[in-house]
Image (cartoon, rainbow, N blue to C red; front, side):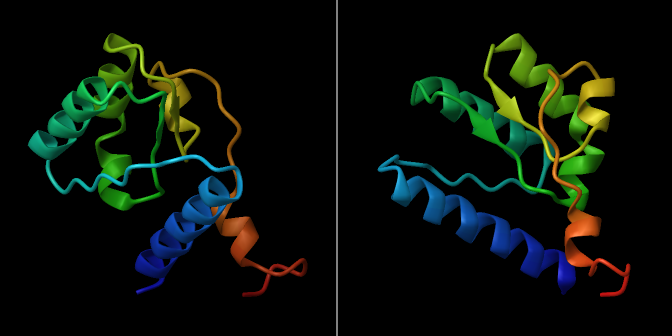
Length: 108
């Protein structure tokens, strides 16, 4: 349940930020390799400026697919994991999700 609420919180923050700066965002969801491919096809068809990937266990397991598609299609992408850089993605700022969920004393 915690991972789901983290994703929902990330999505709400992204939507709030986009609204605050008067930017339109499209939300795509994927739960299979094929759906990830379809998302990238849609990104190109809609001429979108970039992609923000939410922290998700399935997405983490498909990080090489995300990096490969984003690189081949020249889509600027924000990844939530440092492993995406190791896989060949560009360097990006990464928030430490686990640390942000703990208090300064390390407790939740």
